[in-house]
Length: 174
Image 1: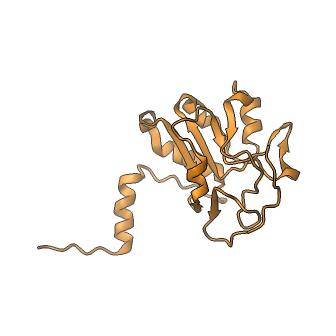
Image 2: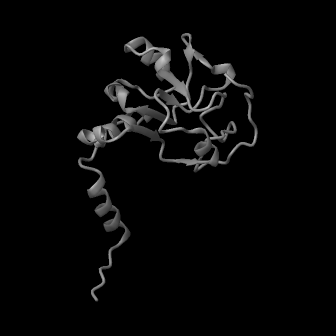
Image 3: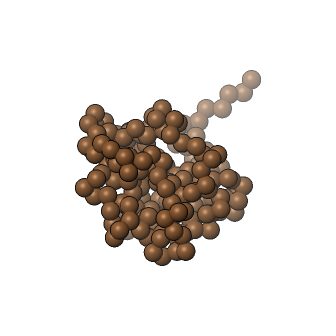
């Protein structure tokens, strides 16, 4: 038979041609987490309506068994962030300071996706700039954790290119 030999660059380019419809590269400064989030949404385009939910995760997260145990993708009906940040930094203007490494959004909230500015103040931003209330928002786990798993033990994930902390600095539940 005929064997086709491609280099790594060609394989990646071929795969990307089926996934990425238009390159979304920003000239100038570095891409922020929210830029990547919004770019991902644009890439979904009109296909978004096919899904029951969106689960956005940073590309460098390695999900743990604790993630599988904590999530209820089929049962959740609120927008969910992984957790609230450490106790000493838990509040922004009276609202939870959230970990911004992941975001779960059920289909009934898809209309709010373009309005979300993904970051530690996302909860506060959503309840002050949209009709959403705290009843529409929740966390995946009711405990405090820093977003950086090198600084604070996180039961849901660890960041791939960093050592993992074995210490949980803010034990307790929300």
